[in-house]
Length: 344
Ligand code: SF4
Image 1 (cartoon, rainbow, N blue to C red):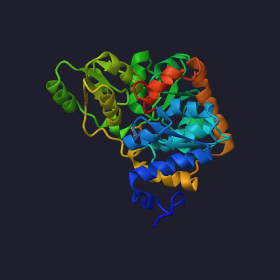
Image 2 (cartoon, helix red, strand yellow):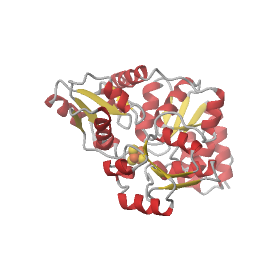
Image 3 (cartoon, rainbow, N blue to C red):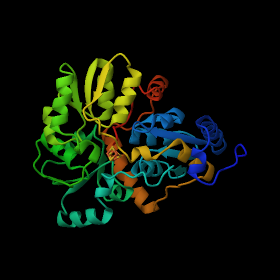
Image 4 (cartoon, protein in one colour):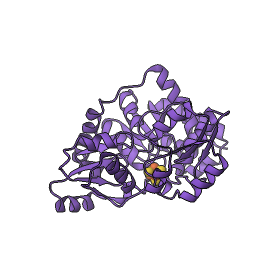
């Protein structure tokens, strides 16, 4: 007999309870800790259901920084929880599963970036937000998939740019800005990079009138074949306007759009576009995390301050961050509109 409310030893123990009881425990402990649960758009539906905020990595972290919560539980991947800590150093940031990392962010380490910088001492460094705190700390400015072009255009044209870690986003920005001096790190998101033209052709054949929208983390040939290239937030806007869309991004977003607009034809470009790392978080692990105040995300204060500087420069360039209005917040929570920048 398990006593109600008493912490259990392992996440597996929570998984043996019925889901209703796990949810009850989560809500109770959340209140006791004055915690807020952030759920990324690509999380499992049951995690989204208990989240206080839903959205994209940066928007979520900024909203968490603006709340009076003492504890932030980030249901996403590691670099996102780090971003929350960078923006909210006084708050305890927890992750339900420490193994939920982002393979794209892990392509580049602080050491490797320092070596590349030494070879290009005049270059400015632009870091996609899908990067570790240490990499952000080594960078001049961060960017998201929504503002990458604007960020790069803010750097004098004759100054070389080291762009990390996504080679596909770097090439897209290079083409959009007409620059020929971007040194792209050879990293990629396996979810977007694995989508291929054959899958696009099959989807188009099945849905000849659908709009094809592709995320800039995809390969160039996919971007060239798309009707629109845009971030996840841009895709959500298009979902409101169009009745039939083929989405070239992670399936979690497509599933959510289907839920929100049941009468519309929304299909994934690739049925295999699933981020397994995002799906490592479960309701049972979330309950365990709250009961044990684990796993806490910590970082060196000097790294945090420098990483904060790179994020801050991006925010200043894009006009800063504004908390959503009550109506926008309600729409975000309902999944109809997302703020921020896509996965990153
Ligand atoms: S979808 Fe891609 S970029 Fe986002 S967390 Fe997964 S691997 Fe990283």
